[in-house]
Image 1 (cartoon, each protein chain N blue to C red):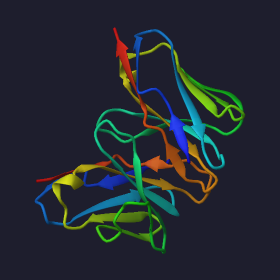
Image 2 (image 1 turned 30 degrees about the vertical axis):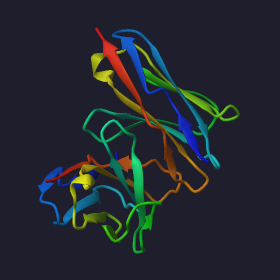
Image 3 (image 1 turned 180 degrees about the vertical axis):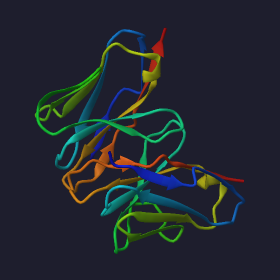
Length: 116
Length: 109
C-alpha cells in the first residue's frame, strides 16, 4: 500500500523559532499533498493544499507567511512554521494523493509540535 | 454551506455491534470516506463509498445513500482495540475532503 512518512514525529521548540516538517510519499508520486492541523478532541482542519511545482492554496484564516509550504518534488512537501508561538502547538498531519483526483488520501503519522 | 454531521460520542460493549451514522450536505459529491483515528495518531483509511449500497470488509461495513445524504459505518464483533474516533469525510465537487468532527467510540468490557 501507499506509505507516507513525516519527520519529525515530535518537536519541542522555543517561542520565536522556526520549525520545518517534512512529508514524503515513499512508494508513489504525490501530485497533491495536504497539510492539516488538529487540536485535542477536534477534527482535522485543512490548512493548505499543495501541488507539485506550484504555490500552495491556503484555507481561509491560515497565514501563508507564517506557514510556508514547499512542494518541490512529487515525493516531498515541507511545512515551515515560522516564528512559532505557544498557540501554534498542535498535531500537524500531512496527506498525499496520487495522480488520480478521485484517489484516497494517504496520511502521514503526524508531527506533534510543542512551542514553549 | 457544507456540513458533515456525526454523533460526538458512542459507547458499546465488547463483542457487540455498533452503527455510526453520518449525514452530509456538500457542494457536489465524489465519494465518502470513513477513517479510524486512535488518540495521538494519524487517521487510517477504513472505507470508500461512491455508489449506493453496502460495502463489507471483514468486521467493518459501510453504507451509502446519496439521495438521502447519509452513510453509516457498522462495526461487528467489537474489540477493545476498536476504541477510537471514527471520521466521516466527503469529497466534494472540487475533490476536496470535507471532514466531520468525528465520533469517539468507547468500548466497554
